[in-house]
Image 1 (cartoon, rainbow, N blue to C red):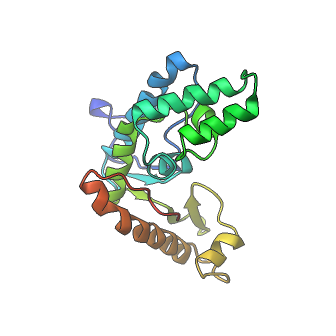
Image 2 (image 1 turned 90 degrees about the vertical axis):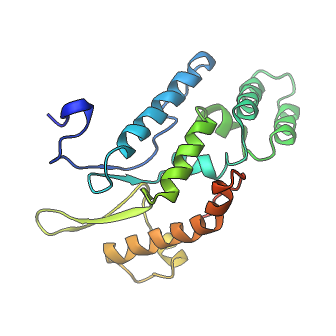
Length: 207
């Protein structure tokens, strides 16, 4: 009973998507395009709802489209995926890994191409870029349970390491932590958005 007319959420329904809208399985080569299309459709459907109804948190598989995979084309990534898959059966595995890094210098490891980010497409990157520029993707949200318990909602855990990086070593207020995380995202986005708007490839700086 969550859906209303047109397969959209009913007005009284709200969702928070915790991130990682892509790469939900390691597909065989014949299914890569299908798996990639499902992730794209899912994120398009979620983002078609207004931001006060559907909140989108950025996961590492989402950010990878504009970080590790920022300079890939559909063709270059398909070639990288095939090269990575061939390493397991290569007569000289070490030489195959060296060749992979030589031919695909922007992809940190063969595993990212073959498994972790295997369903990448340029269309996904464009959507992630647009949602970031539109302010739809966040790194964190703060919330409160019905019993008054405060919550910090993020894709991944925030530990004392991340708080130190934010300059908030002693902070425990979810509102303050969420604001600091989202500000860090805004700073990275400000450095990349101009290039994206001109159609120039640029990676989002490390958050």
